[in-house]
Amino acid sequence: MNTQPFTCLILGDQGQVAYELKRELATLGRVIAASRSTLPVAIDLAQHNDFESLIRQTKPNCIVNAAAYTAVDKAEQEPELAMRINAEAVAELAQAAAKANIPLIHYSTDYVFDGTAQQPYQEDQPTNPQGVYGQSKLAGEQAIAASGANHLILRTSWVYGTRGGNFLRTMRRLAREREELSVVADQTGCPTWSRHIAQATAQILIQLKRDPSLITEHSGIYHLVSSGQGSWHDFATAIIEHQRQQETIACQRIVPITTAQFPTPAKRPAYSVLNTDKLAETFGVRLPDWREALSQVNAELDQPHI
Ligand SMILES: NC(=O)C1=CN([C@@H]2O[C@H](COP(=O)(O)OP(=O)(O)OC[C@H]3O[C@@H](n4cnc5c(N)ncnc54)[C@H](OP(=O)(O)O)[C@@H]3O)[C@@H](O)[C@H]2O)C=CC1
Ligand SMILES: Cc1cn([C@H]2C[C@H](O)[C@@H](COP(=O)(O)OP(=O)(O)O[C@H]3O[C@@H](C)C(=O)[C@@H](O)[C@H]3O)O2)c(=O)[nH]c1=O
Image (tube, rainbow, N blue to C red; front, top):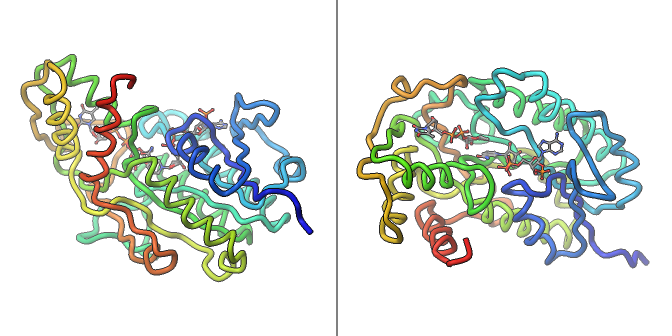
């Protein structure tokens, strides 16, 4: 009889999603988080890693890869590094997972799409990333599929939370500093709370723990984002309107602008809303509306210690 507790090996530690996963997956059993600074298990995806020995050492029942190169604009200047972390390292990880027959849960992005759709993207719609980050994430998806590993690729979008680098924290900081903010209103997507991603992952893993054969049947890509949609300007407005009720801020106006008025090194999709029906139908998981999620995050931010 296997007396080992159910073990999840998370790649990533202090990242937005990794941090929330550590807490949510602890309800399933043992959690091991590996990142550049986690000892005794340190992993630097920019380097070659011996994932086979990591798996032998940690004996996981599943691997959850929440580590990635996520600097969208910077990736345009360092495409090799983005590809190394988001594609080559992912290929090595997936091959090791396949060899050991351990399921791999991996996160990908709405930025694999070009944003020309008129309605929410389904999983099997053609991809066409507009920047290096999206290209590297797409290459990671393809490497996993080619590895033969049992896997779930969870594409999410516009991730935010109370920790880490994200749009919510940037807007709150800028609102304290500037009287006027200009925010693009012609890019539409789904802001998604990091904790909801972690909770959904836990809900899926509970089902896989109960019935490990499910992963073989259901390997593939799934969209995991909040319900509803909005522009970055909508998101900024919702963030700052709440902040204004809680504290005195400099910001008086949030001006809607076009993408052309806010030039960035990386091109972003104009429309990247993801259809989540496949996840709901397969695993019974559907996230609440992004505005509802934002209220919960705001409630946490309103606690005096944050
Ligand atoms: N942020 C977003 O808006 C979106 C993210 N995603 C995807 O979701 C996943 C999680 O993203 P998120 O939590 O926001 O990312 P973060 O940028 O918050 O965190 C990135 C994580 O990757 C780890 N990492 C980065 N470089 C390396 C490296 N060289 N070696 C080892 N670990 C490394 C970091 O390690 P450490 O813990 O040491 O800091 C950290 O845990 C990623 O796959 C991302 O592509 C998808 C859509 C939107
Ligand atoms: C700071 C700022 C940004 N913007 C615009 C620029 C851009 O079009 C949009 C979002 O900018 P950010 O750089 O914060 O977000 P960005 O890094 O593009 O976020 C993306 O990250 C990766 C990891 C993903 O996978 C995506 O799903 C998405 O979340 O807002 C403004 O219009 N005004 C501003 O003051």
